[in-house]
Amino acid sequence: MSMASTTTKHQSGHPPADGETLNPVPPGEKTWGWFAIFNIWANDVQSLFGYSLVASLFISYGVSGWTAFSALIVAGLMVMFFVNLSGAAGEKYGIPYPVLARASMGVEGAKLPAVLRAVVAVFWYGVQVYFASTAVALLIRSLTGIHGGTEIMGLTGIDWFSFVLVWAFHIVIFWRGMGWVETFLNIAGPFVYLVMIGLVIVLWQMSDGQLLSAAQTIFANPEGTFASEVKGFIAIIGTMVAYFAAVMINFSDFSRYARDKKAMVQGNLAGLPFNMILFSALALLTTAGAAVVFGEEIINPTEIVERTDSVLLGVIAAVTFFAATVGINLVANFIPAVNGIANLAPAKISFRNAGLITSLFALIIGGFWTSFISQFGISGFVNTLGATLAPIYGIMIVDYYLLRKEQLDIEDLYDHEGGQYYYSNGWNKAALTAFGMAAIFSVATVWIPALGILSGYAWIIGAVLGGVIYRQMTRSLG
Image 1 (cartoon, rainbow, N blue to C red):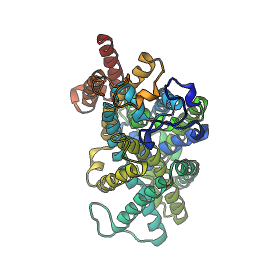
Image 2 (spheres, one colour):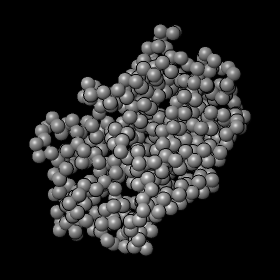
Image 3 (cartoon, helix red, strand yellow):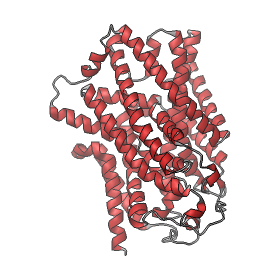
Image 4 (cartoon, rainbow, N blue to C red):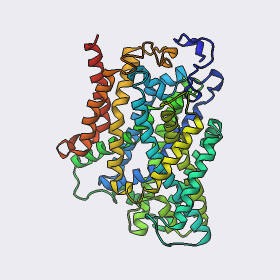
């Protein structure tokens, strides 16, 4: 779709003079087909943290394998529906999330959700750098046989070396530009499944064929009831939707590169349900197999690979787990963080400078993962971040579909001194008020025991509340 076919005063095909990082993607650069979108989700789902989260959900909620598996499939379908909604404007107008947010929050007010998304992205970025480094550490130990050593902040010398190496590798990839990012994603995605399938086969042999039966019951609470299964089902859906909360609000950062709407929709359809089904099944079988073979509930696959004492599997697994985790970092964390940081001063902060800022923060955050963040609890950590971002999603969707009927003025989105999105000194007070009220309540459902019955719905509650309050406030203001 060309820029000339959209509702805009800017008909020349050249982006507004507002800094190159956030400019609309020109028609000639909208080249991503359905497979590129598919691989966004392949890499997003397949990370080491994603595996650890899925494995922890099997263990934490004490439900049967089928209940957990079904919940993960439902979560994947819900996320697919939500990203099709949030990505439509990006595909149509070629604009990133921080610019889209200006329509509802104001050209200055959009800095708040952009910064919040960037903070979450930088946080995740550092965590994923750490998880990717565990794969490199596995590779070094598999090849050298060196284990143990003095620990500093929970990491040995090999762990720290691996961490810094992975951190530097990310910088090299993003320095090469989005073309390299797309190529890396297309290569990394499919290979993870080969390793996961190989690991399942090894565990199947080591468990004397008991792996499948164990996957059905090994994590289930023997005293569980139908009510507890339903409660666990809802909680797993809620946590997984919250896990994708950040990508759901900023999917326009990626859909803006899609060739057309059909490519986006087909990529999401093939990418989300398929990857959730296959990856969740492999994660369930692997976690159950490890519990049978080693007698422990291990949620990090690199630890499982190390226990198999297979050098060949260790080397292959390390390389592919590393590639997959770097892939999700580029998709879900690096790009949103760069766009959010650049939005603070679009004309001054370039793509590369924003990337360096992101990397510096990630170096600190990733280094502190084992000493602080990992003690926080994976589910609570994920649900809190999701509940914080959820109202932004609801506000953006209501604004784009109900108020603006899918029509935006590109030139006004880049006008910081006037235009229809300037509101009150650049801030839309109705949207900001709706965000604040909804975010406080949705986060409270995660942490206040009296609201615990709603915790599985934290993201849905935040998104719906944000949208409803915003809609009502805009009506009252005329």
